[in-house]
Length: 260
Image (cartoon, rainbow, N blue to C red):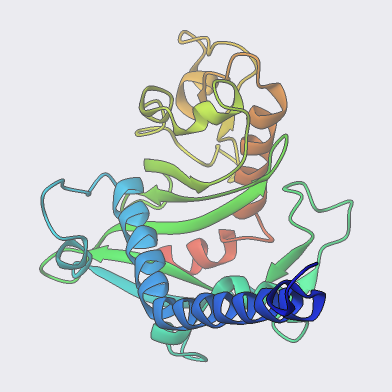
């Protein structure tokens, strides 16, 4: 005969108490660790910004290195700098989900597959000692084969020549589309130019190998990713969008003219 300690009521009571204790521990840990997680996310984002610009130095504090970077807010509708929000508390991903701060993109124009475009976003400037712009880093994103690829593209002082490129979040196939993380592939971008003679976006990932004897290809294109046609196309498409009229092109024109 089972004892009272082994009764169904006692079993369920013990199980409930164990679940309750575990839930309290997990909830407490989540609350306590949230500031640390947020700080780590910011640190990782800054590391990727510096890396895209070719400025990341191993063994040196990321926070210390990031002191050379000026964070500014840009209104993508006007192509001008904005003081609408404090960049210290601004999160572009939150604004993408906010109908008041973003807009849907017609499918015919949504070449990058992002569905919505935020009105405000952060850009990052590195200036010389005399205040002249040396490097501009822009956030970019677009859909590949399996995922949205989030990254940064760095431009030289002329706002046309690529200084560097990096993706910090995606779920492309390892060994195929995932090669967008390969340093050898990314090393093709520095020195490439975004715009052609008529100021249209020519920067692209070629399907296959770039013909070095062809001036247009050698100036604006990089080799495609073997076995990853859709990822390569997705990278080209996000260049077209974010460096085009719906992206940063109006801002780049204003900045180049000294009117931003």
